[in-house]
Amino acid sequence: MRMRACTGLTAIAVAAQVLGLFSDPDVANAASADSGRALYLKVGCYQCHGTQGQGGNTGPRIAPDPMPFETLAAFVRTSSRQMPPYRVKVLSDGDLADIYAYLQSIPKPPDVKSLPLLNDQ
Ligand code: HEC
Image 1 (cartoon, protein in one colour):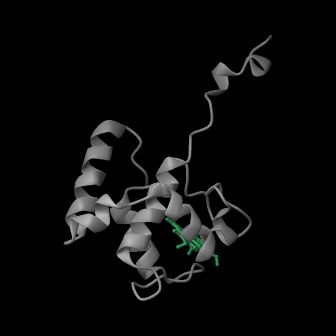
Image 2 (tube, rainbow, N blue to C red):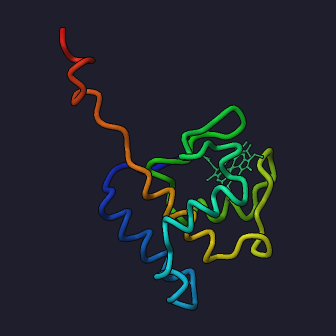
Image 3 (cartoon, protein in one colour):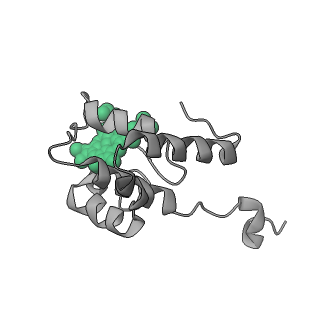
């Protein structure tokens, strides 16, 4: 389930959760979309979810507008269905925060109404 309303408030709540999740504030503050992208490719998320999280044959769409960090982290750590779990040993909290920063940085597609070609008639 995703909550799309009140994105401003959600962003603040997510930020608070991210900060609260890490005892070392430097880890959360250092979250970087650039290194997140590199990690996303390195640990193989892209193989199932596509290079931009758009989804593929094997994995569902996870970006743009990713689920709250807490939900995503819980899923990634404990997944027991088709997706392999990524435990802290193979993917640190800091690395997962970077991956999340990358997913958050992926731009949303333009509104269909803003595309003249689709609204000519
Ligand atoms: C081997 C393929 C595979 C890889 C690699 C993989 N995933 Fe997944 N992922 C899936 C599948 C399939 C699902 C759908 C749920 C299920 O069946 O496990 C999923 C579900 C998810 C979901 C929940 C989506 C939703 O809307 O419920 C998230 C978030 C996610 N993956 C993130 C990641 C991240 C981050 C990585 C890399 C650290 C990753 N996945 C690597 C296959 C993969």
